[in-house]
Image (cartoon, rainbow, N blue to C red; front, side):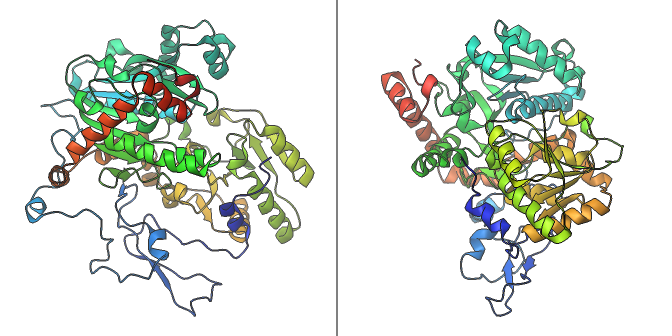
Length: 549
């Protein structure tokens, strides 16, 4: 089952296959000429990349490089910048690029913003949508602390699995008879290791609010079974972050009050490539979900932050690409990595294990021997993957799940051949620990191109060359790049990415986007209520979530 690389993976196996180089830190147009491709009779293929400094956020409205290379070569704009899609009137151009009052999220002596972070998972499930929103909440609370006068200003809104069967399946047997209070205590104790003050509500730390939810085993996801918006009362609230707005809303529409009615500014955060997941089962289903996800963003968000360019286009006028996640303090170490190669992650074929085996075969042809690698983790395809490498007779050791911050061995090199990521947390953690990271040159890894210890390959030949380099050199990283990985810096990027300029707000108002947003929301609500709603959810594969009021 699944023992065949995808078409994109097969391309990487061809020794001379080249993919375009995208220099994310470049301040000028990137010009690429492939070494061994004579199809253009020596012509140079020119691609345009938006200018931005290290760690900056790139608007999704810029033309994508792959879009340009598929058509007739365009002439470079006079200012060597990409031309963005938005068009402004003369009056709009005279307005400021400063954020609107509602979207200026920085605290000051005059005003402290209050945040509600609504997400789709909670600890002890150690998944990205549980860990990262929790840390975002904590660091926003820390940012507000000098101005908040000891009051809590951030509320984390998380799912409570009402079924003990679902809690056992996801968290373990010890959670069968647990209560929300037990889970809240666990979350606060875990957060104490990172930010002790923000873990304590009595000292002005974060608040935690629960909504009832169920676990959908087929999708491996948690979905609300109540109207989350009903938890917020009748007052006008300040700022809301919807972590995965498509996930939060697709099976449960808000009631009479919409997210944008309740909150002055609503920011969506795109974490997961759901379209790719659905595509494995059905191309038609993938197209349907693409439309649904865009619908949810159009209906319920003022701004959408995508963690990487891998994610679909939701709404050109609202979205921006920016990594707003950081790395926990415990991953920033002074000790130098020692030796050894490892992979850490979920054991599923989509992580690129077939490609890894092909690379090892190529390495053996070049050097006379395979490289040894430790594979750390577990997953549904674990036994098949073990049998696959045993058949190949390659030196792969399979180890049980380990905490990445406390590995039994201080490895020198992380290899992550996956093309299924959006923004890999394991890779970011390895970068912070000062390890070499050998990665495919892919949109999901664009953020990592700026780090000197990240080595990106385009084909099997380059993978082998980079591995040989990493084995014979020591990794290093300057302080500026280290700071880019911190949660403090990531929180700053988050506030910048969440802003809507006065110029852009005027343009959206002229285009009637507020009215169209209400129309999208009303349509979703009408299809998602009563008996009609049950049918709607069932058709969309809601399973245990379908039959709700």
